[in-house]
Length: 133
Image (cartoon, rainbow, N blue to C red; front, side):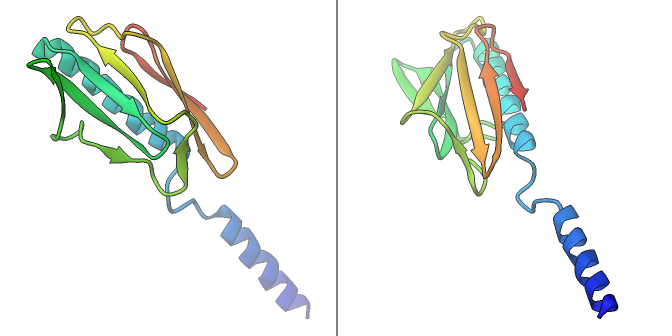
């Protein structure tokens, strides 16, 4: 009986120590922040406004061409869904636009949640993106 109890406790400890197969939420936030920074850089390099949009389910990037917003399709700026169980805690849709000098039209804070874990990604007016977790 004692052996079975020890095996049960060891099994429970092993399961609790296993990493989440979805990855860490902070890593997902960091991936988003790096892509935001790539959008900032694309606006400066191409001399055209680039926007980042965020919804509860995912995010994407558009470039302003000939008076219209055109979705960017090349990596790393294509539309992405948040990972399984992750949700941005915002309204329907939020957008930040970087001008050709890299300045953002506003500051945006994107709270991310998965289960009981929460982090925020803040896009600054200077085009920076910072993860706070």
